[in-house]
Image (tube, rainbow, N blue to C red; front, side, top):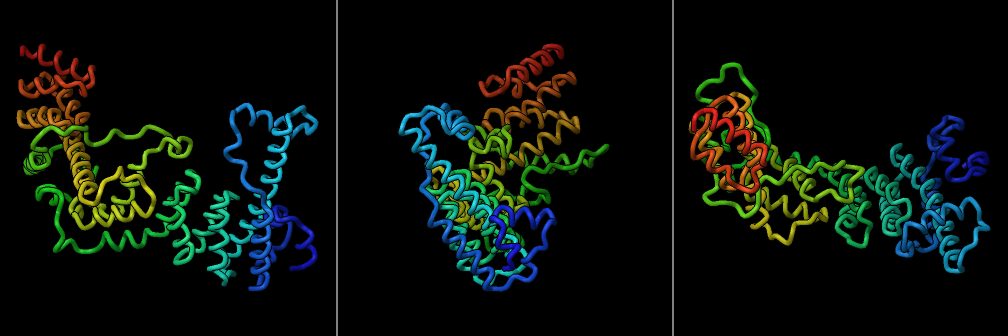
Length: 395
């Protein structure tokens, strides 16, 4: 590298490149120069002090450290001073590693890294050491298949890796594996065991996709809706409601509370985007994929996992059909009766009660359906709407 480049710190190098204040030397970088970056990164890793995670026993210490950074002469105990100095050194090391990783990522983007295996190994080590882990994961994603993907596949199920780093790694690993998912989704289903009944497999929409609202739907459409709902209705009441309630948190800000089933759904939907593709073989492949991604499978084996997710996908489908019915204001006795039975079986309760509530407000009711509302999972306001509507109709 030239003298002007070597005179800058790692952070200054990155900022100079991206601000346009200095010509990017990477446009002429050769293998030796990339190896120099890798060597500097290895040295920075070796020089980095151990993490201080686990020593921060209270939020007050974080506030005290901020005050220490502004005034090093702050009165402290010997233990606090040692910890804060170690944290300062750790922060400096992380900043150095961050700058080098950003340079390495730029070199990877420009196709100037031939020592791919070595770069992937160093980036993986950065994640395990919790030094600029997000930057290291970005490098692994840029390195791609096979070395970057293999490193990410080792990191995401490893419980010794930080939880947020594992989540970030999973996100990018799934991105790398999307072509494989698409290939699996396009595979013919002949010879595979379907997990959803035949009337459902005739639908041409995704799991949660109902039909478009029409001004005057054909009667065949209502007949199909009835057949689907009858086929999906469980023979007995489920011990837990399906589908699971949608998570209301923010994907990024509330990531610590984000349930793993959301990511499991992403994987399964990528493998089986249409209900006709929901087969035992593909759900089993999804189980293995989710296990490799380090997702919580709740101790289920492939058989148990397949049964639970087939029921959940069926419940989402039933929700979509029930929603379509009430939006079409189709309040025939068979629809109200099925809504009541779905509530009784603990499936698609929200949309089933919505159908009954809308029917009641329209002055329609069905005795067996209304009786099915006497369940603790039915929202009180929905029960009240249906009961009032039934009373107004002279029930």
